[in-house]
Length: 607
Image (cartoon, helix red, strand yellow):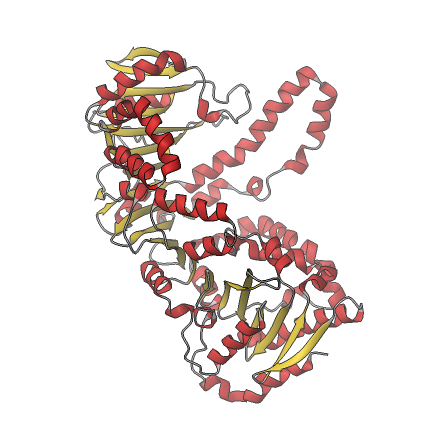
């Protein structure tokens, strides 16, 4: 059948070990690619993962039951498929080296641009076994008469070409779509496959490539054979983002302008939206993300980048101010599960709105009328705020539906200016003013930011408040605002930073200043999420028993099927022995922003 695919790797023989490192996906991808993702070495990443506490947790005896269930869930829908192929899942070959994908525009059949892709996987020592699996799949489809393919020779390799719609008989179409969805941002994989009429598969040594465009596949093979033509790896935007991401095990880069142009081709509305987004956020040429596993007391480090070669503009120009990371405010209590601080130049809002209006005459006409009516009030409020915005999330125990609460505290040198504007509009908004420990609070009996939540006891019953005191304007759940006003301005109160793990996480952040930074206790969040579903069901069952006992019995009977697997199976006390906090920060530079986050291991003494 496809035995010719074995000829090329055999012909190169043992000399393959002396061949220099093969070009990675960034060298093989067309220069006009819009998205690229690459994992440099699957095997090396697995080795790094095995050196972390996360792997220790995964291999622990306490997790065996959950581990077996997860493996069984993954295998269940594939058992019949592989059994028919005569393939043992236990020996299923996995990639060992590079694993990457590139997305790029190609000329469509009816003219204009369509979407193409190139997928690369290096199976290393597993290459022959991987080809055996491909052979089994193709033979089955061919025997059933449902797969039509052709063999051709391309630069000394055998290429199999077939229609992707034929994969439906194997059930592989859904598998491919599901697997590709996470690495295809802003592109619907279903639309991608609808526009692709041919797939081309080739083996080159230990590496396999699948490409939707034969010309792009030929160009990639020519690079492998020594052609030094420029590719995506030589593009200025790509190089800039890779430099921002630094040393990582894997990364993804998305060229925003090129992607927008490709998706909006021939669509005037799409082009208008792209221009509007640029005016609002500035010219963001690309975004990137990368990760690195392991490190001192670390499980994973993540990095991301926003590349703006012309500098910030619009709203991004209002968030680029860096300030030192100082002690946490006194209202960030030890029971906080998350804290963040960002800077925003409120006094630049009016200038931003005016610039936006001048850039777009149609929008400008509406903005002019809006600013005539409200501009003075906006300017009065914005002149009194910022730049620091603090956000705190707490988890009150025992846990109920209302346990997770948040507070936003905006630094203000002249809070009276903000209160004067609020006092003018408060009656129409239904907000009642009151004095609280010498401070002023305006409260609503309900929380408008939680309107999507069910109206049940324990959910959003305390309402929303805006408080003024301690040099802040505070917005959040009423109890949070009251607690923050009690603590505001007081010295020596315990804070989240008094926790040893959190303190070490803060010290591990590089540099001394940032435009934004924060902390999060992952296990606490998981604890709330784990309980939330059960609490919601309890509430609904309780109400249903009053109105329709028979329906309540049916709901309770089906409750087991609604479990959140694997979340309901997780032992949170066990997680606390292995997983520490997350710390993150964002910094500004002349060409955009770079950020990093760190998931720490739990302190050794806690294991």
